Image (cartoon, rainbow, N blue to C red):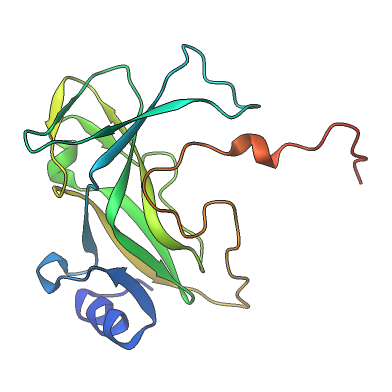
Length: 179
């Protein structure tokens, strides 16, 4: 089951989920609009290596916005801190943003129960596109879970700003014995 807009509002007020800052004007019939935060990251190496930490550079989106270029991966973040210890959050790009040719969060829309923080957004434009901090970039929905809950305690917990991949931290240690 998916939470309706009124239930998202009630859950945000009674603490079953966190959206901060919360604005009732961003509540939809069954989702909540999240806005683009002011910082973008891009990788600075020509080849991103999944087995290593990769260097990034940060860009602050100015008052006049920032032009995203095709062929570049941008890591943005939600302005809002979002999370829940009981609902499963899913984040998708808004259709209005998709109609501008911007892919948002295509490969990783699901959040874990227990994650609380700003969401990192994978942004990929198909043509040059000027974006602005604070623009409504995505919609987050909340689903009711069933069964026992193991809260998220992973490497991105309490994220503040965009987070580069830490995939390399998941790799088995050299010399470790597989079981």
